[in-house]
Image (cartoon, rainbow over all chains, first blue to last red; front, side):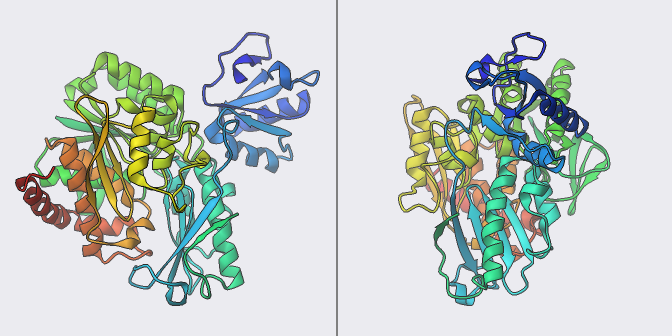
Length: 205
Length: 308
């Protein structure tokens, strides 16, 4: 699909092979979005969408898929929310939705939630751990995109209720997965579930 | 014989650091720039350097750049790597192993790097972890790698035909009742995404290798002790396994031996440290030397007994 994209000057491009297409709904919004993203250092380019996605006078943005999350956030912050994001990767499957949790005692051994000192929530390849007595994030682990160590640095030592969401701090799919772990952890902490009544199990969010 | 690591870091006073890696006590530096012993590339460098020191091996080199997810540092690293190739630095430094670590999974950059290496330096063995592994898998070049080190949340990504990032794994998910790492290793091999040797990191670690005729993938070892459950929660403890393995490979051990040795050393370091889910990976670094010594006794005993 993306192979049919061409740039705004009519020259046919071979698009980024791991590319995503961001549809903005109008040419003006696409041009503004390009300005915003280039100013923030993102590598994007204006392209004509593939014919089956055209609605008339169209212009879209092409980018690497691994930065789609950060780009969407940057555009929303600039009041330029994308109309649609299409990815060569997203077209084949959906984001992993299985989230599991495990509890540790103070010595670091697995235990039931009744004896828990730490809660670790796994979302796909990412994990978030909090001290259930204090609500402070003690670790993040897993993942492989460059914002993973950055998120680790920004989140550890902060209370789960006093930290920006990973999808706002991060820019990649790993950041998005950590956000899923964050949401479950946040819900558990604020419902009191992190300290009572649950066994380690699988949930879907 | 020496190793080179390509990987991003989350923060530094300068955007690009490169050169020889040093570890003095717990202080890590690349060139003359000190880096925090943090989750990610820095944790890998600490483990690799400590393993090399333990075995009195050759220097370790790195090209690192600051990248918080935008991909800018990743591009800088690949550009600098190209310069190293053009200037013949790999040959000058005797590089025999290259690890692709925390990098934005940009397939085109990975594909180009692998093509160039295959042409100019086919003897160099490639190691992939984190974004380097994601990019290799997505770009269709992961079977060219000597070693990949997925954890249990990532092995399904190698085994699933349509997935090009672990976030898109739909079928083979850790946490589901039918999740079986050994079967997924075989599936990855059948799919052509497995490296020659695979390490799957989890509560039980697995080491598997391609058969000599290349037709099958055999699980050579599984390691489940000492049991330190907290390691899964500690960011960077997968990076240290890959780092140990890299350092050992660059010191002359076979890839299979390095993998088993690394897995034992990592678990022992966690045990010696008394790791809990609040432990930070930098705290483990001081235990690496003792852990490598203890692990060596275990693996040499196994090898004497005929195990690999």
